[in-house]
Length: 290
Image 1: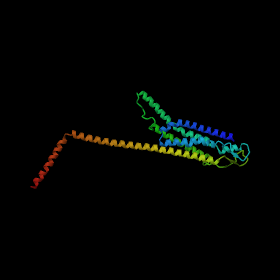
Image 2: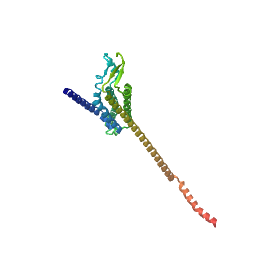
Image 3: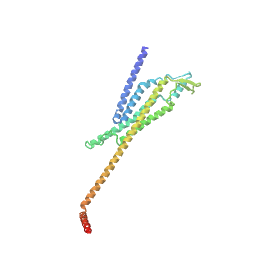
Image 4: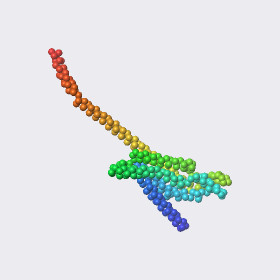
C-alpha cells in the first residue's frame, strides 16, 4: 500500500513538473503576442493558458490515461474488444485536444513574425538613412500588420470551430454513454462494452468544449472591435478631410474677393457716384413739395 501511494505521489510530481515545463515553453513562445494584443486578445491568451493548457496537462491526461486499458466488453472473442474500442474512439480526446491547442496557438506566431520582419526592415532603413526610422512603432497595428492580426483571429476562431465540429461528429453530440452496443466483426454477436469513469470524462469534455466556445467568442469580439475601430477612424479622417477642404475653399474665396476689390479701378468711381445719387435724392423730394 505504501509503495502504491509513493508511486502515485511520484506520478503526480512528474505531471506537475511537466505542466510547469510546458507552461514555461508556451509562455516564452507566445509572450510577445501579449504586447501587440488588444484587451480581448489578452483575455483570450489567459483563457487558453489557464482553462485549456493547464487543465489539459495537469488533469485531462490523467483522466483519459486508462481509456484503452479499462475498456471492457462482455466477450472473450479475440480482437472484439479492440475493434469495438476503435469504433467508439476513432481518435483519442487527448490527441485531438493536443492538435487543437497546436493549431489554435500557431496563428499568433504570424503576428510575432510580422513584427520581427518590420523591426528588421526598420533597422536596415535606419542604417542606410543615418538614424531615421521607417516605422515609428513596428508593433502598432497599421497597414499590413493590421491585416495579419485580423487574419490570425480568423484562423484561431476557424480552427476552434472546426475541432468542435469534429468532436461533435465523432462522439455524437459530446456524449459518452455508460453502456455501448457493438456488433462488429469478429464479435460473435452484439456485445455490451463499458468505458471507465464516463461521467468524469464527460464533464471534462464539456469543460473543454465550453472553454473553446468562449475563446471563439473572444476572437469574434476582438474582430468586431478591430473592424469597428478601423471604420470609426476612417469616418473621422474623412470628416476631417471634408472640413479642411471646405475651410480651404472659403479661404480661397475670401482671398479672391479681397484681391478683386484691390485691383478693380472702377470700384471707387462707382461707389462715389452712388453716394452722390443718395445725396441728391432728398433735395429733389424737397423741391417737389415746395
